[in-house]
Image (cartoon, rainbow, N blue to C red; front, side, top):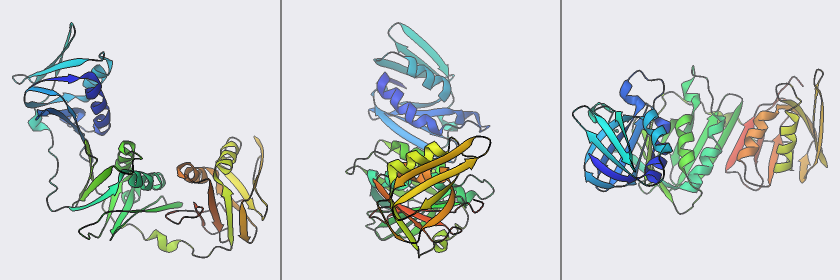
Length: 368
């Protein structure tokens, strides 16, 4: 194997792929990145057996081949090489790679590519397409609410459902629920429910753009999901378990319904968390104003007052952990949102003003 490749292209591709490198696995080859030079491109892949990321970048292929190089040393070195072309060649007698540029030369010991896991087969997969911008929005609006309790692994993922031309995502950690939906192209009429680890989806989100014209081709098999973004593919195992029907638990009637300004409300909550104990605040919604208060004897007191854009129904005093509300407001892109309550001890529902495609439900604190 021998190639000429630009430092910029190699560095960017390594940075994309390296996030899937195993840091805890006891199999030495998984600490490396797989490189394959063929047909005018260098393909780079990393996996920890649960998540795999594969990307390619153009290069001049003098002779084809493949090798696995230790990710830490290889990526750190490439990042520090000056801009320009790098010659990468491999000696298969002892699996070492030589890198040359300018007057410099480095040798890195690697592994046989035969030891590296191959990618799963997508034959027979259910395939659908969604725009990158829509999928990015759906993932941003759900992934953050997934749980972290490994004793309930299915709650550490996001439940995806595809029905006709609608893709929905649902995540919960037992205290809050985030639910969003998006349009999808489902030409073959597939219908399924899968649970995808939130970590895998976080990596997909980093790679997606807000370009509505760019597409993602998603393939689903019995235990894997593939996200094909063109020059990058992300492959993730699916989580097993029965995801609870949490949307059935969401109240349908809300006697208190207020429209509030997103930015001002979020900034007030973020200030309040500097003083409050464990983020606990009391929110009082009235026809003309909403107040945020808290009293932490050893620290101080909080009082914030904001105007209400509109309100119908009954005034209410209700307590929340402010951080759960801030998490929702950070991923919201509208200027106003609806804050709906059905009593101080029942879950509240928040959603963008004028849209029901993104719903966030959060339990109140009943000790305030």
